[in-house]
Length: 168
Image 1 (cartoon, rainbow, N blue to C red):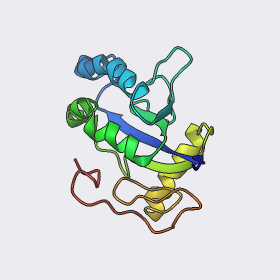
Image 2 (spheres, helix red, strand yellow):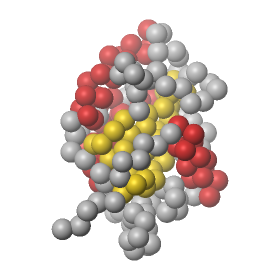
Image 3 (cartoon, helix red, strand yellow):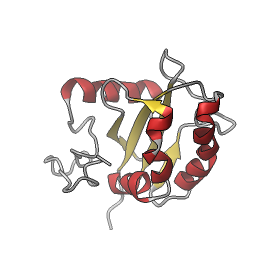
């Protein structure tokens, strides 16, 4: 039996059309708690960023207050992918254009962290910038071009099909 040495971390950013207290954002805000609770009990979930009182939208990492961030760690890329695209999370995800504008650059990034490491917002932003400037690598990647954990084969894993590529 091998002991897992790495988890996958993810940062996703969204540019809200309006502040969270605006009527346009009501449906999105109403789904936050159920979606976060779903993540918390999903197979492979490890940790997610939130304030001390459990507010997942209360952490800001960008100058623009309309940029929301979501950061979490998972046991594997597959468990994160299953949560994003194969769980009830997909319902609000498919409606995202009602609430969010496109962001410049990649909207999310994945990277490997040692088991037990809690990534910082600064670390996550560095990984997002790395993905934007250099493209997918073993240090910053996406669902389309996945890289194995450190110490494993270094060839990227390129999933087949539209859903596997993260283009839903």
